[in-house]
Amino acid sequence: MADRVVVGGALYDQGRLLAARRSAPPELAGRWELPGGKVEPGESAEQALVRELREELGVETEPLERIPGEWPLRAGLVLRVWTARLVSGEARPLEDHDELRWLWPDEIDSVDWLDQDRPAVAEAARRLRAAPQG
Image (tube, rainbow, N blue to C red; front, side, top):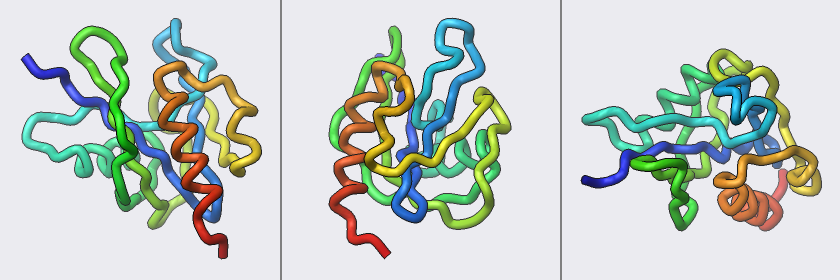
């Protein structure tokens, strides 16, 4: 049986990357991640990302491109990450998070990222640094 996909969003706005601090489950609480969640049956990964970011953060987003690679989370779950841009709304921690931070590229390592998010975060930060600013 194929692994169930969890989508993560490397959400960009004005040259910054959004980090979300987990409030649950207890073993993950206090650590930081790229927000997202499970793809539901009949949904594309991009549709799931837009839905999850709306539910978790109260924002509308546009998926851009998938970051190469996938990372096992636990048995039967695999993380795939997309870059996305903020279209409208102001991100708020509505579900599963107790704090959000917009990080400039040189601040990416200032939070304690979940281990499985680190490779995608590093690539998202590299892309952010390489992007034309303005």
